[in-house]
Image (cartoon, one colour):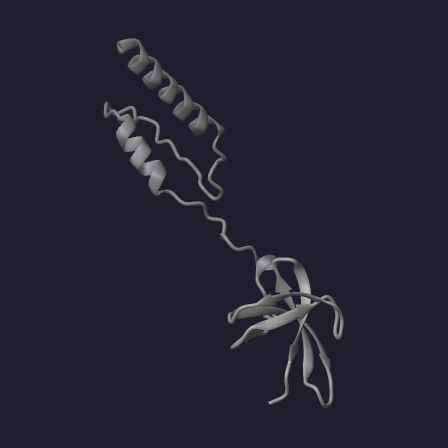
Length: 132
């Protein structure tokens, strides 16, 4: 029984060390280590780790080229809506009432309404919006 418990504990410790060593480094984090001064004061490891955990990088998290300048329209579907591979094309599936993001592509139809391209889990698809 003791061998099983010690083996399990050793295996758990080895796995946790492996997971910690293989983890990806945190982006935007810089570690600063304060050297001990020559005046006789000693910096402990706890003080150094507290200082390094409080320091953030000077770089912004969102880069200037990642900002959306012209956001696309969000459509709120109020009923079950079928989506198609192209306007007047083959039905791919159906969407429950929800909010969907458009791609910005629209095709106007005079009498029947308009076709709007949206993002789905199957890729881009078209939905038909009836005229009101």
